[in-house]
Image (cartoon, rainbow over all chains, first blue to last red; front, top):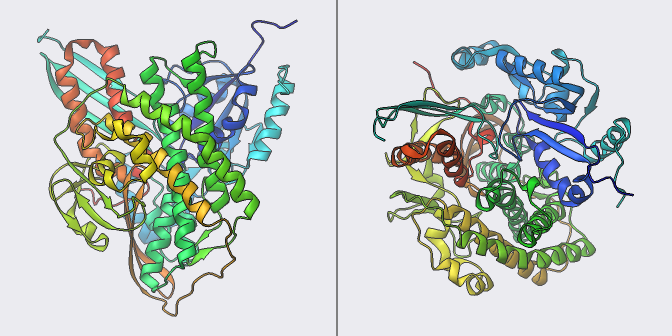
Length: 167
Length: 429
């Protein structure tokens, strides 16, 4: 007996300050996994795949990138409030680096970039995700380690009671 | 109709690489203000690499961008090698060609199938394609077959399709085995019919926006992306080391990215420019099987950038298969070395989105100064100008439809906002 409307894992994929390499790794993972995941995964918010809509209630929010501004901080907090689980994806989200390299600049270089920081309201320091909100799981790597990501996906399917298509 | 007044703000333009926004103000049927804002936050790579050892520089600069990382990697390697007088071996050049082809197939595949195809089919997302509809079913399957071919080619030659770990100054640190080359060739051949179907999709796509602009890009005898002089449809030919002298940096105060003009005028780089300049240099099999599509070029229709990308996918498949057949076995080679520890080097390559320029000044094998110009920065001035014209010509469409048309035109440029905001160049007044 197949349920015509099986429960799907509602996910969001969000990018902050980074090169979005993990987004690319995700799109490459789909080459192999798209048809198996399709029945069990709902990309509710994912600018890479569809028109940007309002933030919805999510099972899992995947967050890529470091945090550079107050506006990004606020958005991240809203994502946290909307999601049951939040996963930090890739090096910039997990550790801040390399996007946080300006935190380590000497005073002369800091003075050089100051006008830009001021003009676009940058935070004094680039922050990693768990400096702002609690994080439930981390997938490290630059780009993210895809084996680690796949293990986590299986765990999430199980945790949220969603049958995984074994095909 | 001409008394139309409205404000439109697109906060997050979707299905492009990175973050961009658009503010538009229309009063009495006229565009009073239009700002295309690249809203990605800077990561200051040109400052970040100062003082870094040259061996580490390409891998760090690859982090400017996820999707075109392997283009930054190859361009940066070229600039280091030119600065230090390192000559890569013929096998290295062959492997680099296959590496860039893997990137072109994968990256154009992402743009055409995931970002642009939903516009053509009239759906919001590839994820919404209906498997019970035979055309959508086929395109959906084609998506992953083509992307996977590019992904596999990148893995075979670079170790990964993003930030390829085996690409280094002086050569490669790992070499694909014969079995891997055979698997790769098989996947490339499997993708060919899908690439031909993709060309048909964009050949039959009715979207039009003509721009009387100058098209600029590397012109090489074999349509190879990595070497050759810079040419323009206005008739210039410039050695790649002198390219930067012809570019004028343009301050766009509301955008986090730098804009550029070529000889004082807006211009366009990317697949459309390359096809307009060099279609006769494509692989013979591509020329034969895409002849109907190639008759479209030279083209001034910005949307033909999509068709040009689809043709380039076919070219890279055909060329890579031929190169793999001619070179079924690769030998391990040590990295080419240099006795020099200082110099200035320019790397120029054709990245998927257009001409990419890296210039490095090196002293004691450490970076003193860097200048990087990316394709999206070069297209930014044209893109904004053309969005303005599009709005003026379609003001009666209503906000929702107009927003969709704006996003569609911006997507045709395949902009990459991560690239565009890698560094700080402007001295703000």
